[in-house]
Amino acid sequence: MSARARYVAGVLGRLLVEETRRSRRGGGDTGEEGQERARTVREALQSLGPFYIKVGQMLSTRPDFVPPAMIEEFEKLHDQVTPVPFHMFEPVLVEAFGARWPRLFREIDTSTPLGAASLAQVYRAVLADGTPAAVKIQRPGVETVMTQDMAVLRRAARMIARAAPRFTTVIDLPAMLGVLFDAMEGESDFRKEAANMGMARRLTEEHKHLTVPLVLLDPTRRVLVQSLAPGTSIRDADPETFTADERAGIGRDLMAFMFRGFFLDRYFHADPHPGNIFVAPGHPAHLIDWGMAGRVEANVSRSLVLALLNVAANDGTGLAKTWTEMGHPTPWADLPGFRTDMAALVPKVTSASLEELNFGVTLTAVLTHATRRGIQSSPVIALLGKSFANLEGSIRHLCPELSITEVFGENLRTIMFGLAQETLSEQQAARTALELMIAAPGSLQQAREILRNLANHDPTPRPAANGAASGRGRPSTHTHHTRPALILAAAIIWSSRRR
Image (cartoon, rainbow, N blue to C red; front, top):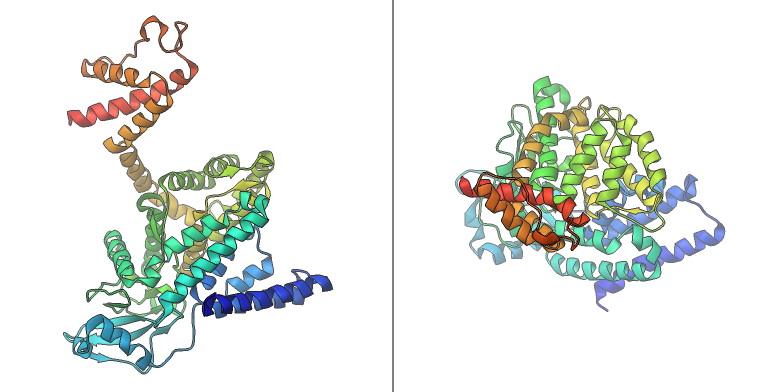
């Protein structure tokens, strides 16, 4: 066992001993003892470093299996540590740029970092050509620690899965960790973070009030030099110094960017807390720190669009149906009970402003009801919930009167048009047709017949000769249901080829 694994085991072991003692005393999750327990767990996670902090942050969006006192404490988790002297980071700069690295900079403020976290420190600098910059340097040895922590957490998740199979049937901890680890790739390799920034910067080009810092020098694995974001954290900004149009514009552009990231680009900033959004009057907001970026599977993102449409339409029953289809009901799932839960929840959300409601928390409330009713939700939902909640908290500082469902409605046309283009693409149509051909006996011959008829301007499907579809002179039930989809797919392929 490595020294890091022994340290983690020691911290978690002490927590386990304390939990055992508390259970024997009959301590609960509420009152002063519950708060003390939550604070102890939060401090332990914070002491263990970045991965455990991120796990705690994700757990803060899962009230389905974390008590309220624990959620309140986990929301306080910040990856802020005491800065260490610059001389500890200088070898990293030498490794990245060589012994002549100082020539790249006209000046660099090594006395006080702009930010200090367990993964890296950031310094204010001016490049040789006079460009203001922020220099992000990875802490020595942190990559090894992250690799070891990932292995420990994976083993722990497998142990929980074996010990509590019924729990894992509803909450897939290994899958949740997989989503988290994938999202954090840019935290350990700054070249990936730079790639995230480049993609995000392109996606923000259409937004007047939002942008992403520019990567100024070729990134290395452990050093990233980027343009300096003007202003201050959105948490510390004075709303009175912004015009009403600026405040609303920043809030709307942040929401629009995230909505399109969730539903069209399927790529989003997974940690948009207030410290990662810088604002200044007269400037677009800067969305910084792209070490943690999430990705969403196409089917999940489409289902989430439908879920939000149901919320906007005040349709709790529709939301319950969409969420159930997006997840996996267990054999003991209570679907009627879940529909009742959503029918009571949705009216509280529709048209609410950020002052009145936290939509990210509402998303996790749906998770809570789903889990209690025996419905497993997609593992990426926890990351989405964290992102939603962080974004809302950020915007609330500057523009609390903004309505999330209203902004979603404003962007719905763009989202639906993009989804339609995707669905009608030749590649997607070919894939759909192929899946149907594999699923339905005789479908290949039907598709050929449809294409031949379309070429002759006759889209009417013809019955198979001698009752081949079912063996009794009638098409089978399966073929009956797949034929309309085959016709649509074939028509799309045919029209694309004609163009």
